[in-house]
Image 1 (cartoon, each protein chain N blue to C red):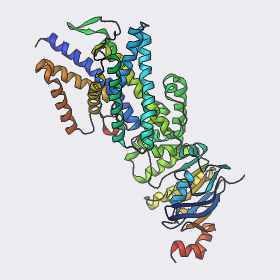
Image 2 (image 1 turned 135 degrees about the vertical axis):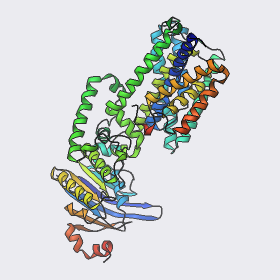
Image 3 (image 1 turned 180 degrees about the horizontal axis):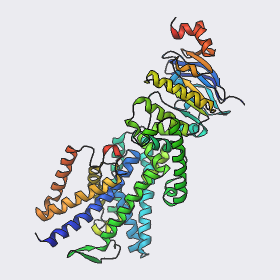
Image 4 (image 1 turned 120 degrees about the vertical axis):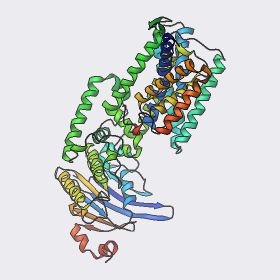
Length: 251
Length: 295
């Protein structure tokens, strides 16, 4: 089986500023692939191009063998590419469980009339969604906060809600943007365990972060610096690479 | 003041209150689901009532058909408002104020159109049960008013169920709370807004066919209803269907009591003073609290 995600020769410029220069890399199925780089390396831009928030000036994003460069955010999500945000973006007024249910289910164009008239169907659908949400809530240790509005939870827990909500969509590729930012050391530990467990269950993850500790869960790392991939390999190899040390660690 | 007079004014207040509440309900639905203040809500009711009048009175077709098509006309108008006015505004990165202005313009356009074709006259739409009355503690109440109250209550309960118990209802809420986050979950945010406006339109059309037998149809009806409905919705916290009806009833009762205790000329003064006082004391409205309570 080929790659889940292929980034093909992507370049991007904001006005006169060249942010990405011919970036290419793959995400292999079943891997946790890391993308590291210092601030301003172009990580976020690349991430936004992958998830559809930006269209690259040049190059293509190929997801599951299909060119998705011009597809919208929602379409990519429905195809199985799920992203999270650097600052957890939960539906603040909805409870933890409602957050999960709202995410996974009604994605298409059908709707309101069916909801009002197709009662048994709608009920069954909702019951299924709730059952799945409850399972995932347990897996993410969110049980005690199930009925609490997500906006009232501390940042670390909101991150877990966001992650659980993404998992609820049954993504083929989970893209996480700086998931450890704002988390305490123990929370980062929990996050790492959660990611490893998800990966063991077959989830492919693309992890974008400058947090080297978090990168310990990855099997493959690409180092981005000034818009170019300067090295690829295991995290260990990255730590040994003089170019990465120079660019990223500053030593 | 006799007991009968008191009961009579309470009944009148209750009826008017549900009228305001029904308009407020539509405003709350649209605000909750799309963060748009729809200044056309009263005019959706005007459209609904005009369509019902044309079918049931002008064409002489069965009343029930007029009612149904009046409601549908509201829904279709809501859909068109989104497609023709809201969507182009949103595409050009319009803000909440621009939506308000656009719908306000739409409200005047509807009003002017009705003036053009129907003139300044008012038209009477027959109510459910005709003009039949029932006695309540020696005071009289129209059967239609009772139906208005029953149907409004039913609609509120249905909406409550819809938002709490259906996945699409929750997706609609999600899309309004955080459009960007909703997009990344694959929710079709634009379609959710269209559905919200259509739903608000259906509620508006229903309000029209239910209200017209009590207050008569004329071209200025829309804006007057929008003002009172807006007050009701704000009292209820702007996002709560239940709150909108409750706010409407409070407004209606205060007005009615002001009429019997002070004078009818001062009813708006009293009602709006109360509104201002409540908003100062409870800026989130009676059921506001970020829109969670009251389903």
